[in-house]
Amino acid sequence: MKALHEMGVAELGRALQANQVSSTEITKHLLARVASHEQLGAWLCVDGDAALAQATAADAQRAQGVGGALLGVPLAHKDIFVTRELPTTAGSKMLAGYRSPFDATVVARLAQAGTVTLGKLNCDEFAMGSSNENSAYGAVRNPWDTARVPGGSSGGSAAAVAARLVPAATGTDTGGSIRQPASFSGVTGIKPTYGVCSRYGMIAFASSLDQAGPLARSAEDCALLLSAMSGFDERDATSAQRAPQDFHAQMLAARDTGEAARPLKGLRIGLPAEFFPAALAGDVDGAVRRALAELEKLGATLVDVSLPRTELSIPVYYIIAPAEASSNLSRFDGVRFGHRAAKYTDLLDMYKKTRAEGFGAEVKRRIMIGTYVLSHGYYDAYYLQAQKLRRMIADDFQRCFTQCDLIAGPVAPTVAWKLGDKGDDPVASYLADIFTLPASLAGLPGMSVPAGFGEAGMPVGLQLIGNYFQEGSLLHAAHAFQQATDWHTRAPAGY
Ligand code: GLN
Image 1 (cartoon, helix red, strand yellow):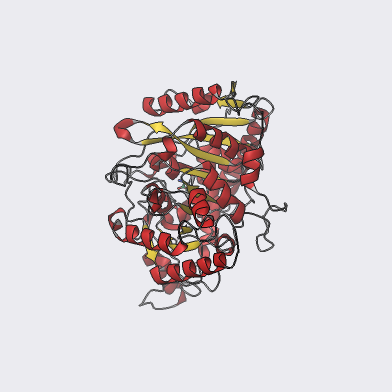
Image 2 (cartoon, rainbow, N blue to C red):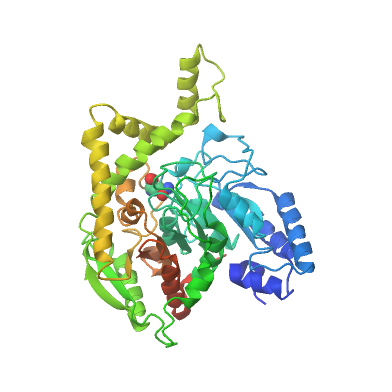
């Protein structure tokens, strides 16, 4: 048998089912690994005793004949999901020491499926960022090269999965925060259609965009997790009212062509010209094109399509997301949650000092931008225009989907950059979100699949985007690709 940290979710589930290993053994093994890799900065909190208690309970259930593919499988949560048993910070000083009185729906559902929670993972403050350098608790390092960023905002999740500290983790994606760190860290991640996972208990950044999803090593593992995480929740008004879905079964059943060598026969993959601009780094372009050739070998046909407003996604997103953030973050006022300034003269002064002390620079920048674009006199010029363009961007996708079943392209214009490289230039970081923002604005499902390596041996992800609620066919294409390639099985040196 392989070492326990080398096994993914499905593999661990099978070993548990076959009584080859106990959840307690897996949990102990991973806790020891987590402790010996603290230098990555991926974890904000680890509770070994609580994890072992959950593992013992899972083992007892299994001994009584309770099944389940996830029963006893360890994972960890991005620290943007509130948890009753563990502190929740959202990567912010504002929430230092905060304890939620309830679990996020995603957390509760994964616990119900029998998973064991090792701890909470670092992220950009309130999920604002693309490098995990905006966390109040320090940067996360990329295990492929610790001088580089793991991507963000779910950087702790991506780094922990890449370093084989945990087989899977939750993440959230508002404008790319599952797909981009998955790409930068060489793991598989899926952001489902807006509304598939409940946002209840997910600390809000931009409510019309925020979605939860898994990061794991393979599409198969993502399918298992997504099935447990997703589903209608009456506590989220934007939750999609759909019957519970088994994405794993859908993934296996999707487009069963009956031809083992060409499982993607008949699948039309659209390549938007705008996703392959001259400015795209050569190493990323090369890896993505080789992956596309592989998909062709598997039976898919490539068709040229156009998403003409791709570039406009950047200003549109960076108006809408800050607008919603400025409203959502008004609740952090020193009265109801977390931090409160120690010294102040009156209520207004308390608000000001609390927010000045509690929020980091990027969060303050977004609150200012958001308040500005929503203010009387600018609302029509910025916010309303952005909303109109958002609709047009969504319509552009629907036109594409008359010509193709899935859309493919790069996740990011370059591989992971060095820590500090974009530190004093927030706009440079915003521009790097160009390929993930369109699907977010349209509310479409998107994935990042390991597709090879580029400059300095850094991972490159292939992005796949599907039409609404087509998670099953996205996962199917990714799974077929992973059956034919081994990029997703590669581990960084020393891990
Ligand atoms: N990088 C984007 C931002 O900073 C996306 C973040 C996210 O998806 N949470 O807003």
